[in-house]
Length: 493
Ligand SMILES: [Zn+2]
Image 1 (tube, rainbow, N blue to C red):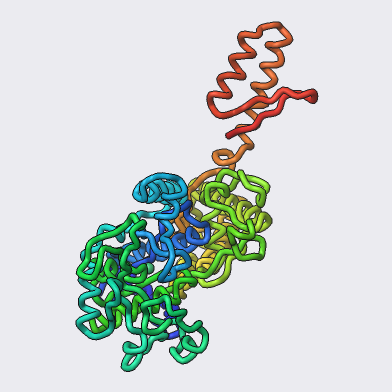
Image 2 (image 1 turned 90 degrees about the horizontal axis):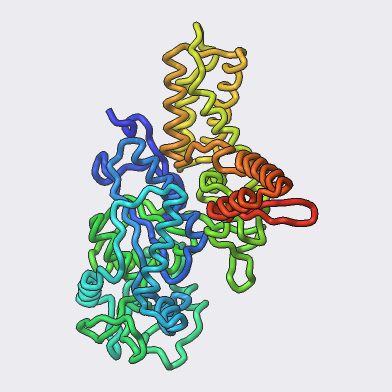
């Protein structure tokens, strides 16, 4: 008996605008696709939030016993600035500015992306396909769409005919837009474009002579449109109709809308049963934006080297902070919020560490089975992690009462409490059990203060060899001693 047979999940489906009971296409198996990063710069913290939410979804599905094939792509073909059909692609632009090969840009930021996700204790996806590794599949898709009459070629570029498609399909089904409004809200063509209508989008673009990333195709030497890669890679690995497609809210339109249109035009069926969208991450109440400077990258958040936060935060604290909001709510990153999460996280870890030492009693004063089911109910309700965390804290309170002799659990209940706490805290939320002393500076500060004191004694005794050794050995371990007129302080890097 698998857990998923007794725990039924409801997923908020963007397509229907409501929560639906999750029923996978093949019993016991789940296919999930999430749009990955475009690797032309350090991964955006907002994207990390999206991936973190789907990491939790992945973890929970696995915990329930589903065999999950989780596909998250790497966009390395470069799509055009502002996702437009004209202009320079982001990877080529970065390569030109830094005078390196486009694939060096891709490699550098793919490594950065993987490092950050590893630090934050992400599970790797089952398949991480790249757009450049699937050019042939993308060309085949374009041929199918042309053959079915939903795309046209002009001057070596191929465009999806949105108006034609909309005659007997619903373009806007996901984003709840309709073509009439789109026509009304888009500027007329300026005569420069090859497109029949401004709503049409590129499936293939002929490359200008200076464009470095290019591939041969039946239409021209060029490159695929961005929306196409996700259709090609998701259907290749998950089938023409699969269970879950996730991504950030900002991808709903046009990206995901176009994915649906491409699939229906090529394969004559809707690609996805459950569309899930993670909401945005704000910084101090404002949208994060490079142009206004209201932006912090994941490395800066982890190292504390930024102007927004009073200190560095441990990866698990950042995960915990994220899980304290529903993935469908806007999450506002603030110093106060992170400090509060840090406190909560250590309170939870303290309780879990105490749990290991508790002894069973003669009677149970707390209904563990009922509490356990409430934890599952929270996650079954569209992965409602903040409610789950509230139940974990309820258990933490019980644990402390047992420790103080004010409550008790019989052995069977104590074991179930331990297992459930560990399952949800570590397997599902992906937190790592670190005590304050491991991450933080409390213990370290004490030890360094002691060394500073010994060094002062050595100097007073004119034992400069020893005092220099203390300073140099600490420096080699990344701890700098700074001698000032008020004594010696230290900094770490
Ligand atoms: Zn995508």
